[in-house]
Image 1: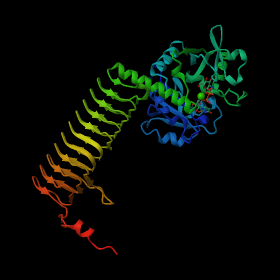
Image 2: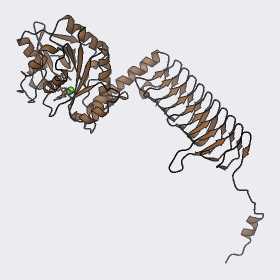
Image 3: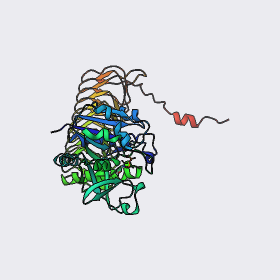
Image 4: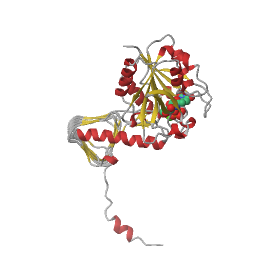
Length: 461
Ligand code: UD1
Ligand code: CA
């Protein structure tokens, strides 16, 4: 097997996005466009990957933390696709094998198509293989002009005659090239065309003149080669990505009440017999178990939700783990690094941050629990607040198994409430409460007898 080198063109401005963000960093199904492209290229195990960057190049580089092996070549100014590919020459000097050229804004290409591209290219012994598609509306794309069935040249829309514009087979902008003749041949490309750019597509006619064999690979599904040029196109393709994911999950036994309003990122896993109600977003690397119920208007980001958990309406759960049979919400906010134990219950208007709730523990109403470790079967009363922040540092609260925190208590951290201990309602707890004790920390009540009568009988001036 020959070495494969991937080059991705990502230097263009993406004018039609009207964005400060480079086009290839716009997100589709939760990941940047460029990440989709790189994932499809994983299927052909390239020995090198080079991104051609220009507009917003630094932003693209810093967004690529998970891809430390990617190399970069700067194209400045951007003089066309042939000029863009030329920038990879230094990175690839002395290398042999096959160069696969991808576009940073074509996110739906499958790894399978790339494998087929290599097979076609190698078995034909081609110098270049062009991925093509037949479109209902080919407007805007370069057209594949054939003579006697063989590709003769590619003509850009703007340079095409009315006859050539009738051709419905288009250039996807994805190619395989034999490295040997490539960079020398690129130098033969001129910029005498409607846009005054160096067109990579001119290489095909050059190769044919030199009798270098050129092949094509037709993809059946035009979605694969669809480029994203505007926010409208981004939204259209996003909808297709979501629909595909929803269909996949439904086929695997998940009930999605209204797929049109359900937003599930591609990497999310959901178990069978889970029911997902309208208006739910499940993002990132979230895993939802089997037989869960996710009610309307819930957003789950990078969470693990075990089997039979119930997330009631209007909850936001981020970076947390919800154990089997636990129940969250409605209107709960579970912030990162929280763990809600088996069968535990988090009720309405409860916020958790970096907090562990033991199995069977409850915080049913109106509480802030931050940096807290809460044991099994603890009952946290309404209005309880862990005062975890002194203005400088965060402090931990520990509530041992079976403790009972009366309503409207403040637990001023660092503090520990012992096993089975009680905190009286309305307490401001500043010291540890030992196991089995009652902590009571509030001023005593005084009743002023006959106060009302005395007030009303006072003479008015
Ligand atoms: C290109 C092809 C066209 C094909 C279409 C498929 C050429 C001349 N035309 O047209 O035949 O049908 O793609 O989508 O190749 N880029 C750079 N530097 C540049 C110019 C472009 O990196 O100087 C990058 C862009 O960021 C983009 C890709 O190359 O990722 C394609 O460029 P674009 O200008 O969008 O080409 P099209 O006009 O779409
Ligand atoms: Ca384009």
